[in-house]
Length: 88
Image (cartoon, rainbow, N blue to C red):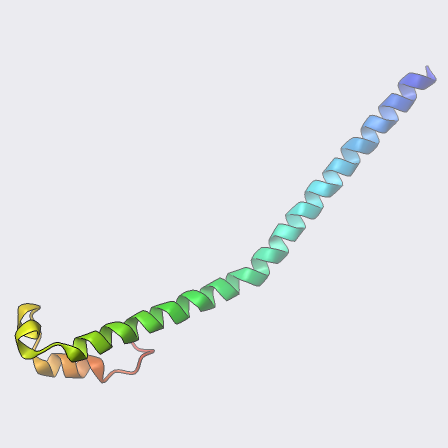
């Protein structure tokens, strides 16, 4: 009878230990997410601002003939390229 009791108590201890590790793993994931999500948002923001700046630089280099092909005038291009990089 003692063998059965010992086996059941070990099984309960293993189950409790596994549950504790699962909760600890979940907490770790939440901590990592809390740290890296704002960082990822900042990286995406910097990348989008850089892409906007790059597109405006290329627009500024187009000649009038190419601007006409895409349906813009020189005034439209100048207005767009004069915007600060943080404005859409």
